Image 1 (cartoon, rainbow, N blue to C red):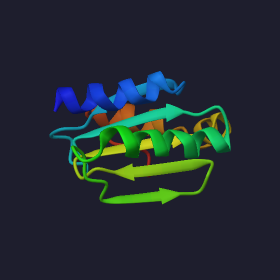
Image 2: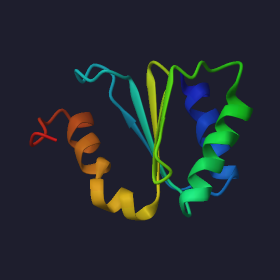
Image 3: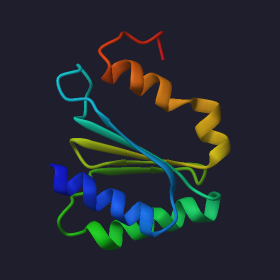
Image 4: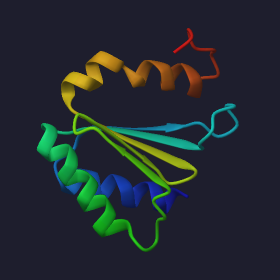
Length: 111
């Protein structure tokens, strides 16, 4: 698992994603084991990061589902969820707070 996370982070970092954070959610009653959040430089960069992940991680990773909006892309790898967001969306939806509370064993506030 650690190698998979490192591979994802490497692709994101190499392609100029910012603020990459990994949340260990194993045994936290969440539907994935890990969540990764990264900021893009804008809408086109968000889509480009998705393309880089697909190109660099396949065939080792199976992309179960990809939800694309341009400002926020969610990639479901089964046990890993990757969120790539524009800075504005990252601030607006503040996934870090929710995932930090969850990974620290605290119940969220209904998010």
